[in-house]
Amino acid sequence: MPTEDITGSFPFSRPDPLLPPPQYAHLLRSAPVARVTIPTGDPVWLISRHEDVRRVLSDQRFSREAITAPGAPRLLPIAEGSKSIFVMDPPEHSRLRRLVSRAFAPARIRELHDEVTALADDLVAAMVAAGPPADLMAGLAQPLPITVICRLLGVPYEDVDRFRAWTDIMLSYDRTREKEVVAAREALSRYLTGLIERKRARPTEDLLMVLIEAADDGDRLDDEELLAFGYTLLGAGYHATTAGLAHAVLTLLRRPTEFRRLGDRPDLLPDAVEELLRCSQAGGGLGALRIAVEDVELHGVRIAKGDAVLPLINAANQDPEVFADPGTLRLDRTPNPHVSFGHGIHHCLGAQLGRMELTAALGALLHRMPGLRPAVAEPDLAWSSQLAFSRPDELPVAW
Image (cartoon, rainbow, N blue to C red; front, side):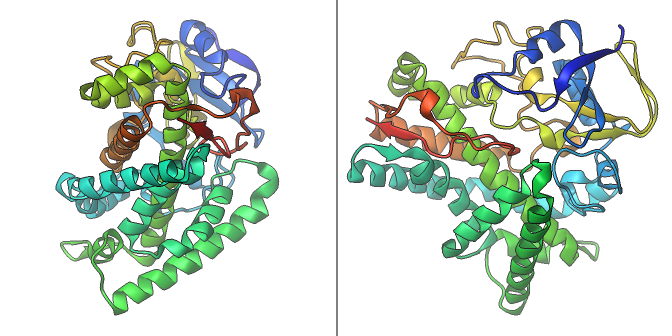
């Protein structure tokens, strides 16, 4: 198959923020390996088909760690030499994953279920008590995940606004904000460093303390690794969940019949959550970039050692070879092998928690706001631009 250059740059513009860019259908059909230019000016190979995306995500010939090298192509402002588990290769990734996995053990996450469910219900109840209209972003989509993250890290909720501001900047791919990104990262580092020092002096019972104490045969996380994990939790645990919840609600509000059906059939909620995750365009997969560490051929295209490769998770979730009628929301779709949480060794550690929060939030809305509807016309929504996880600034609703 010949190499194809896609006109324009990546990320693609989206006429509709809830739908895949039109280019995805073309990539899936005719150009499963295509070349684009990212905002840094670097060329990148886009990989779109489900099978190929899973392959790139799990094949160690495509390195995550290589994007932290000086001058390496990258879409997000990841620090050079970062020690985040998010951008490590084996064996260091294996070591860190082993140390931190106990903090995300299924039993530990299950312990949060009742607390997360109650928190979601309380937030929705407060909106109901205040009366319509309400901003779903300020009332639920933002406070739910950030409160859970503060609970996990053991930090005071009054610091939320600072976390939010720092991480909003850190997850921007706007090249004009590089100095702001550095300043935000340094501010967050100072905060987390002080927090770690206080916890070492006076141990607490929270996930950050588990990470501080995590040890295996004498091995521990060093301070830089702890800081990097704090960044990861705030970025993925807060921003990804906030954006994912907004996209899920907007997707259902476009389909009031399906929303009512889900209210009548709460047993469908687990499958519906998976389908909403599959259809979500909240994350563009910008953080999945990899560098080929040896020559690889894919669909007859030679990907040379040193080339940047981006597996398009959202495109893979629309692959018609895997998902029948992929453009249609099917709340009872099974099986549903979407790759929204990644695949392979970098499969999201917090996937179970993300599902739990989305399920709790939708459950509370279905229970307390069965007549949920938009309070403004969708075209009037203002969307945060050039963020790794797209979301509306406000989401006014009535019921």
